[in-house]
Length: 215
Image (tube, rainbow, N blue to C red; front, side, top):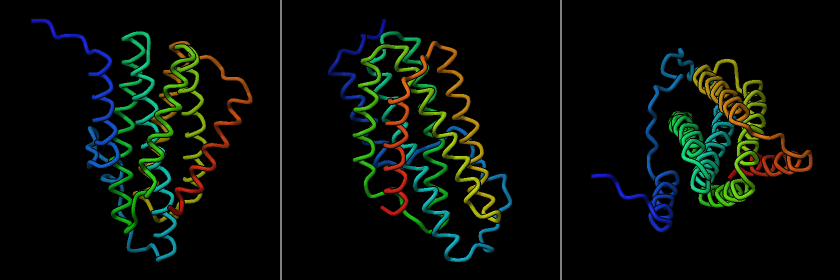
């Protein structure tokens, strides 16, 4: 017997469930954390280095909260099943990142952001807005987001202590995945966003990262 297509209420209910799982539940990764294969040298980190590393990983965790919201919203409003699949696949890899960063924060003795519900809600609205502008714009937004995240992660690799091998391994793999997501979006027809939009995205990201570093 064929499955009944999901109506709008079904889709909204599923989206609400995914939001609660992202914000409140323990994320489960499909891939092993890159930190597992890295030689842990946490005993070489002093208190200041631990705090800074935990803060940087908290920022990355917030980025993954936002990625879940963005891709869920874009998949919800996508106009084709193929495009929905693109966003769903990217979201699954971002779930891995979410689990990896959360585990690493706990190992460093830190905490996740207190504003995660706010980050999720804001990103979800942005994702819906991008999707409403059409598939090419939505994919272009995905590509530009991932390019900016890639640059942001490179900055974290430069700031993380050399002895924090575990965090660096996680960030390096995340950076590689984000590069692939941007390429996928472009290959599926993502447009280049206007310069003012790219600037606005950078400004919003700067506000988020600076706030999440402390809260």
